[in-house]
Image (tube, rainbow over all chains, first blue to last red; front, side, top):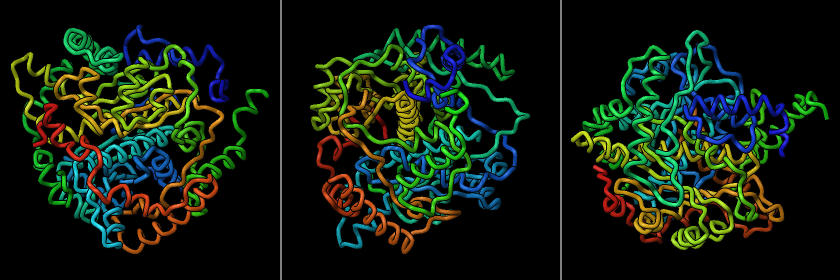
Length: 286
Length: 286
């Protein structure tokens, strides 16, 4: 048993584990974890934070989050991502305006923009007079998107372990070309996701959001569609209604919420034309 | 040792933080972290594990890893991912053969295949006679790829906190259609990444791999290409040569290694034709 698991008296850990698992899964059927430690506590306690104190971050925070991000796996060690740390209030406001005007981007001290970055390898190749053929394929974008997301998630876990709160901003993809201009991105670099980082406002309560029952997302040996998924989704619709009622939120089935989000073509120019935007930014997508 | 002393005296934490940061960045310039905790230790200690003991995982491991995965953020709570847990030796062997025959897939007790999953929402829409227009766009694939990678990375962090080792298998994309058949995936589901999970073989040493200097990946306010990147890459070439020499590995500049990986079109059928494969699997990619 590692020092981590031995740190907490067993009963305390087990109770906490069960409480957090119950909050996330709302199911009595998920077995107890094989061990418990602070890292599992951080992971299972995640909630997106949308209200921040304006207080600055301690020195070294950005570098520590990026060191955590760099510690994530990278396919063939290609490290096809970069990150821009934006702290200038005027730039944060412009990026917020480009991302559906989400106020917490301005409110929080730090806005990290995670970049799919094929430019570094393109430049190294160009300096040697080589064409980096592989980078012109959808595979390269996929590989870099995965690497970038793994890095960003490690930064989130690091931030939350330090008591900071975060929220991802997918809406940074609403206007990819304008965002690229704002951040002076060279060709072959694309802003995949924004991440707000700051001190959660203690006056605004947050809660662990329940997710789909594990039967809907975890399969053994082979995928199971049909009845299993249907029953799990129906159960989740109920779970989420109960959660919304507890939190005095608008009560609506998850199925309905999700359908409202996906029934029409993406509303924003950049998202409905992401393929064209990526091509304009230099990506091959073969 | 009493619990008080095992709670890591400050000096111990600081020394450990500096050691791990130094191993990852090989730079004296990265400032000390604003705090230190077990989660940062887990994150910064990451190394990919490619040799495993065959021992089974304790009960509840898979469910705990998936609960951690489900705790990651999900864009608009759409939860566009699923995971197949493969433990059957014959199926692991077939998947290994489809992924460049990497032996540790068979050796380790668990192989998780992380799936981009637009089928769940497609089905919910179809049951209501609705066409989920948004799912036919590259944006949907991008959103789901990010969600799936965030989930997978949380599972990795959870596993490593429990003393388990992991390695991602991007080569699961070498043969997307054959992998979809093996896992009985419905249309609109795609195996994005494999993840081997098991007990690291203590006889095989692993090391924290140094990454690019932060100047190459972390920018303030705007992206900086050119001289800054060039100098950072040159420094990293040296760092990696030193690391390879320490580990008795083949000594080769990172730039060269990376170029060898990207100078030609992707070698595997599935990767060079990922776009066609995804279209064949039902993805729109508009």
